[in-house]
Length: 157
Ligand code: 4NP
Image (cartoon, rainbow, N blue to C red; front, top):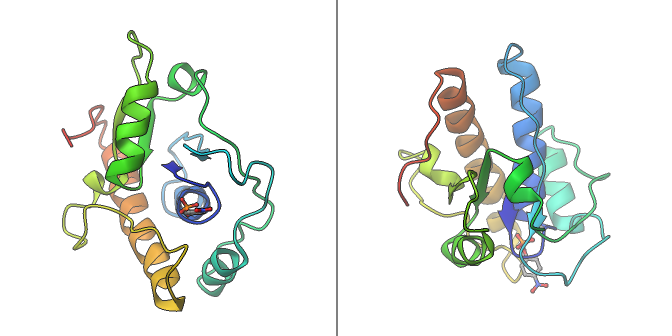
């Protein structure tokens, strides 16, 4: 899961995915991580507004720590999924030529959720942080359903 700072959207997506996978898809072996394209907040916990919004919905993400996307991610992970188009452009540019990782938008997996991106809430209000959780739940369920159905490909962004 990839966003800009790895303190709002992608840690929410990570926590939501891990929780829903364990609860609703116990037979599916998935490993989830998140990172940011920028290094502004490396080593920091998620933004307190993000932690609070996630906690209100039953997701504990307080122990996560921000890191930046690294070259090894393209070999270690099957999917690198961006929260918005700027994040997507960044990881497309960082991808090694022979990377087998599928790169796309997280919400490609939730075509009916009403948004194709998870908007950056950093300079926004309370409601936008709630919306991040809504969108991450939709993306997580869509992605996990696709994985459970054996789909391998990310839809073209
Ligand atoms: P994120 O949100 O990409 O969802 O983690 C942001 C976090 C920090 C900044 C921007 C967006 N920032 O400019 O520091």
